[in-house]
Amino acid sequence: MQAIEIINEFREKKIIEFKEIIQLNDDFFDLKDFAKKILIISIIIFVLALSAGIIISNFYIMILSVLVFPVIFLISYFIEIFKFEQKKKAKEKLIADALLQASSFPKGTSIIKIIKYLSETDYGLLSLEFRKCLNQINNGFSVEEALQEFKARNKSKIISRAMPR
Image 1 (cartoon, rainbow, N blue to C red):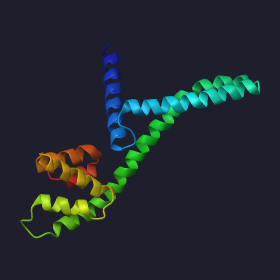
Image 2 (image 1 turned 90 degrees about the vertical axis):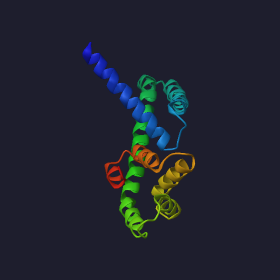
Image 3 (image 1 turned 180 degrees about the vertical axis):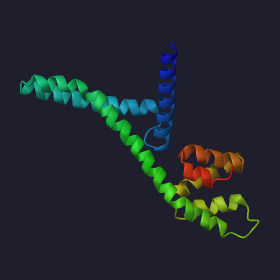
Image 4 (image 1 turned 120 degrees about the horizontal axis):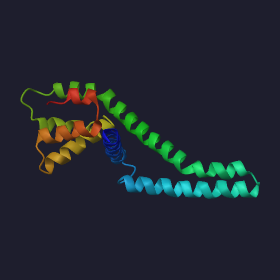
């Protein structure tokens, strides 16, 4: 019984992580949108493969058409994770430059001013993250809360180490 609970907890954790990755990749609104897209693509490919199997009278193609959904789902799942990791690496490459730039501000400069500057410079995806932080601060988050969200969104040890605690 305990093994089943551990498996269910692990599965739930992975589902939650994947939901976050989908949202962070900005491709889908949520897991339902992802599932709809995969289902539609799978149905189209299934019908085409099944039709091809019937037309050329190939039993193996008809059987293989049943595997379309799991294969499409797995490919899409790994593509989403790959895209998230690529974006994370791009941000990690630029974090040192951003910190160097931030350190060049005069002593006593407000952290909000530094975040605003970093959000307007050309640090690619990292600037976008600083823009999100700035929007959160403007919407009532404290600087600490916004930076904690920044760390949570990126799931990166490098970025976590670079941000204040």
